[in-house]
Length: 385
Ligand SMILES: [Zn+2]
Image (cartoon, helix red, strand yellow):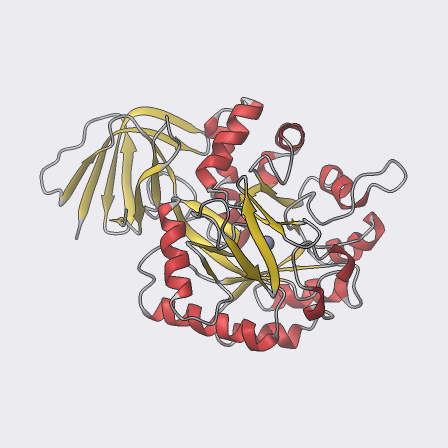
């Protein structure tokens, strides 16, 4: 069995901040983490990370593309390049996220992902799909194409899941059948999430009673907080156990809003996401279409050419973590649960993913504390970057 030793690590894991640490990995699993030097005898690989942070590999449950490729591209190579880009960012597990497009296009994306799985998922791991839409509120499309919006239909989800597992669905709870749909999602192992929604608090509660506990890109494309109707933003603050996705690029949410969320909400129910598009890793001026709509990247902001709506981000998870750490001053050992472990718990992987601890899968990212860029990434104990 392969034995890897990572030495001189500054381990940051939920509740743990340990300098001068040694991590021993056997096969896919972390065997030990501690400050005692481990014997290098019999080790296949020894990596000296020279005091850099070693964190749980990032888990991004909401991301559309990278390196000019989008998950919904018909091109079978797209998911490979996308996964390669995510790995480069330090993401070890992700849910490739679809756009509001036709059913045929969704099935094609699922087939392409299935082929990536058949090829052994050589970059970041993608255990399932996040369907963002098509069951959203046409008035809250953001950059989703309104002409493909339709009513919640579990049969459509089942058809896609027959090709590749669906793990999460972002939909508008207030649409016809929205509360029942949450229950139907759980029955087939899918996390239902309220998003692209015009719901009032009262519209959310029937779905909440049916188990819904997730909010898609909290604050973006949902009803704002008003003092006579607190909307979905108010719901996120009022209801502690709603797992709120947050895009931490300081563009989708201003720094004060990030501070409000991370200092007032229970961190066990906050999940950093990137919502990154094909233009992540690209330079300003890059133009593309998304679900049939034209988008241009300027000043690091991806916006619709028509109307100027934000279309998604170019964010990397490590930069999101840096932004929130700088804005709030919250210690990394407390914040780091929002980049991996919370996501793992909700998806049912909480005993294996999201911590740098004995018995967990060796999915690790080594972060340079000056640049906040990943300098090495381990997936299932194997160094892939
Ligand atoms: Zn999205």
